[in-house]
Length: 107
Image 1 (cartoon, one colour):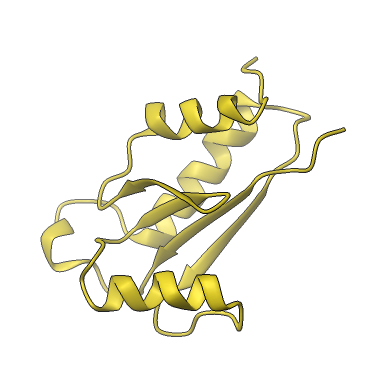
Image 2 (cartoon, rainbow, N blue to C red):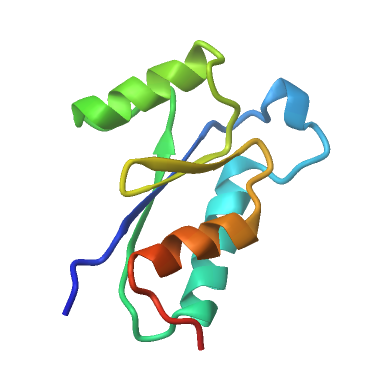
């Protein structure tokens, strides 16, 4: 069995200033987790929500969170195995494409 991909959804409690009419980062995380579970059942993946103002100790995750705080990226930001696949209002098609690059098969 292959190693599950790591999906990180970065965001904050408050909405991104340019994302007023979009779902919150937490809503995006929950929606994405449900969509991926339906699309790739019985194919494990790790998905984590990361608050940009309180990131984990991992240096790479801290760096990305800092880039968002400095407005180099919009949030919610979706990263799969270190590759940015969506920001602001992430597109599910692009996320599915990245999952399938890693061997996930849609059902």
